[in-house]
Length: 240
Figure 1 (cartoon, helix red, strand yellow):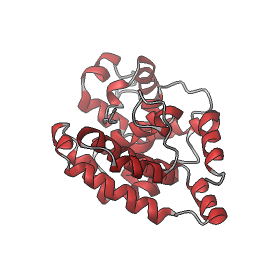
Figure 2: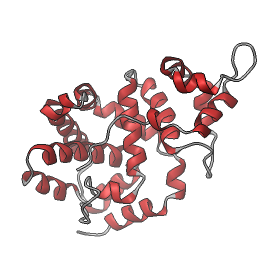
Figure 3: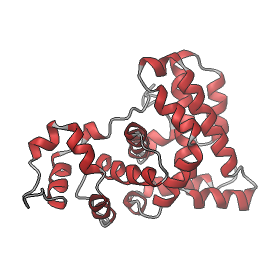
């Protein structure tokens, strides 16, 4: 069972680095050398925090010139900075969740080798009770990720379910997501993966992370183009 890791920055493409160079000229007026961006992680992180780059990414429409990993990282990083969440690895992790969950199959099941779909939170919680060790840890992280993705990126969908079907609202998803991130953070596998700090931060700052994603939800290009994701949530509108 796959556990999402904070590796968006490790998956930037040549087009991403070229985009940075085109947007952010060096002090001498020339573009930053691509090889320096690739090799110097500290310099790259400084450039990724530049407001000018954030604005340039926001202006991208429909057909992206950059990878989803780059696109989500820049948007999430700046959204979290507004909420004073400074840890880059947390931004990297949340951005990777968005990139992974933009794929329908990954959203519906944390195990890419399993054809079964888990569309509802109660199905995930029931599955969790039957799991142990690594599978249990992976499902804990998936529940946290799913709660954050749904309440952060699709607040309108969540609100409609509350109004039409008396479904659980934001508080339910925040408490459930935060508690499962904290449980994941206490798991020995989180220590082995060096992800304790990420899960504990998300457990403590779930609310403000959710609000940061709400702020971004109207600006994300993939929501305009990914019909599969929209169709899934139309399906979830139907009575169970």
